[in-house]
Image (cartoon, rainbow, N blue to C red; front, side, top):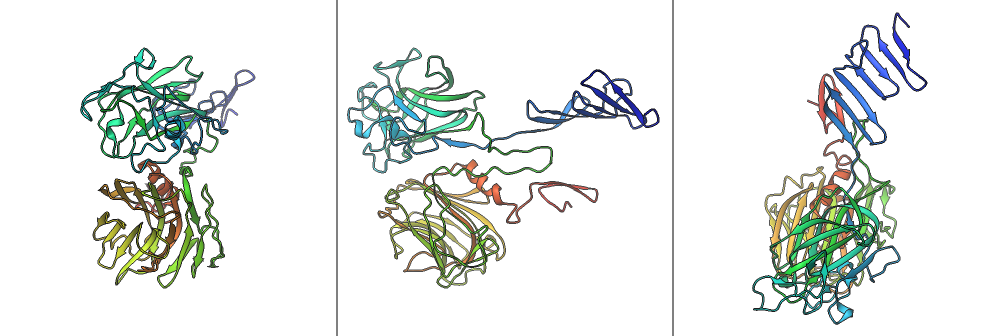
Length: 511
């Protein structure tokens, strides 16, 4: 060993190899490799070390961290199911400090049923006792708690949710009844507990928040401790004698998630698999054989709503629409009606630029007509219209560069009763604020590849997949959908490449 280096045994569990001339040390106990180290001691210019217990690998120069690869987790919306009672078999438990006298319209679980109150009637909402907060001039100024209930020495009303698992909370969102912002929270706290609030931590304080007509607000928390129970304690309302919470959503990461993906020392990142919470419809051509589509098209979402294709074929993992009578249709559930909040997302590439009329990749609305619905048109003049048939339109001009034949684009469209959003390739590019309603019929029709029978507006394009969510996705979730398959559609790679003396990130051909 003297000619090639020194192998030094230091006890039963450690062996150290020192190179004779290259100054390389391999230490089996510390699980490290050192380059440029002294021959007799651990002093190094480059130090590579792996800590399995902490799930972390690092590269260090002169004892300073240069690069660290740590495990990441995907953000998940909780509860992960729509609650139908205060005590769910899945382990979710909803409770509150008080209820409005009519329990049929104010039970705590109705803040977690994923149904937005479309008319302000109080349906699908939790409401506190009608004397919970001070009376006063209508809709003017915040109202303080009257002290009917107290928690942590603070008067107020609270909404409580117990989860079947511990999560580390990053943010939370609350929404009051439609067009009744004055019933929303103004000041208060958020608490976390792991023993039914025998002990607890105050993890967030808010005060003087402003609510709009949509009456929703997102709070960023970024805690580091995982809890399985959260309590939203409100000490003041905007301007009402009682508190109204129509929707309450938690966004966090589970304490333990075996499906979480991140990055490791292979120097290739793996995008997180998109969440499937509230996914009503999901059609994907990936893995289907080339040729005519075999009906029905299997629904891959949580509700497994199947689709029926007419004249549609599959080619290389994409549905092919030739613009001449090709489309996919299905009937959505009866709970999807009225002025419904939803998100539509898909990958699409045009076969040819529209030269006349309009092309409609999707439409949700009245069967066999173009009325009462939500959809998007791409016109021959280069404009894109994301519309509801009540007259609300998001217009984006000069999109010819987006519909260049052969160029895959990822689109996401969000419809809420008061706002419409447009995203492409994970970035928000359009928004429209309006109080107009889509007025969807009961059990509406989803058309993919056309608008309806009058006008038809057939689409001459390929679509790889189509997702319809029964809620508005966050910007992080939209980017997650885009990043999940961007490599498949030629937008970038997830590799770091060293080639011909050039280093590239996100490309296989560094320049």
